[in-house]
Length: 442
Image (cartoon, rainbow, N blue to C red; front, side, top):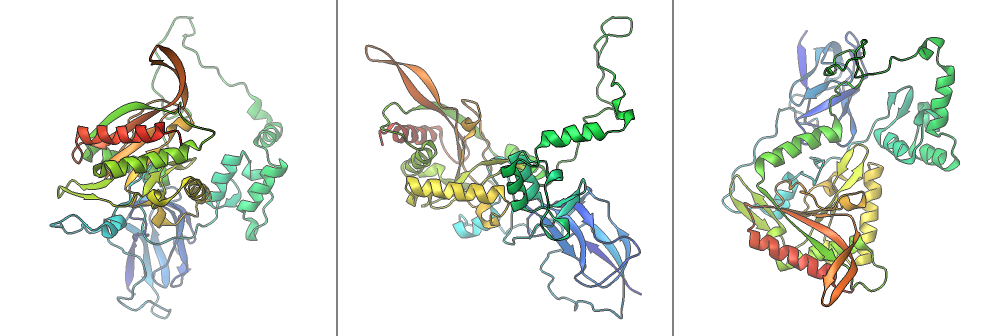
């Protein structure tokens, strides 16, 4: 009987590897064509990979939690000639090669549409995505079945998912279950932790040896690096964080970053205004004044593409890492439109329902890190983008004015740009246009 080696296909995410979540079979089992073989985690979702043949499982690559490189062996089969098989050459919807084939060099700047499909970076925590949207599969962790999006929502709402009453089929915890538990307070983490402490065996109450910088003789001693017997061991990055590490390293190797900083003075503002909407408007104004920073740069071919529209990538922080959805046509939105669009994108990121097409193709980026802390920063430019704007924490500063001093509300602004594609003068004029728009009363 013929044997077949099945390599990990390109799951449509454009990533070089994926992590094994769960095998649906074991070595020696028989499987039919298109039955679920394994559940794999990518940077966006948990994807079920079907069997490419009908036959007997001879070998499986790795166990749960192992990372498999795209194009490397995933499983080996003994083909059953009496069972249904896919016709030779029939498209399965996946590509089984290793890394994607490089795009041919272009004599001129690539068209925006084509470049969008290739661009997959994000501000921080970049995600490379394809055109396919895959359904997330519920996986059992700690005896609880739930998809990653539900677990992320539970962490955000402070819900102990182990105490949530499941209403889904086969005991799967759904998004509504988590939100219901958060609303009625029936699954608070503290209560579960206390109960587990009460139920713990007597052996668990054994006193834990306290750490000390002194030897038994009472003299100071040198500390040692962590060994294999202590807690806090390294864990392999997976999903969004794994891709973030990879893309940040690539950005560091490719971009020549330079950062300018200044403060946006809000003293003249009339009435209560939405700061985020004003930031978006100011960036749009600066892009129209200096189009060189609302652009993509191809370092390999030394070509630059300046965009007539402003598609603004806005960083959204989650427990799984940073996503950067694109606020499309920001130059055509008013304040209410900006706020509604940002709210929609944030909700889609949090429940992991955002289309993959919304996570790429932006022309310039905004990192509003000041919502948490920090005044100035050196945000990371992820190619092919040329620039990123960072907004720091709002503060009340003492400002010198003609004849005395005043206290003004100000926002620190950091502009990082790729110096290969833009000059210092262009960046300074861009920053001035942004500051001028922010200083406008309305």
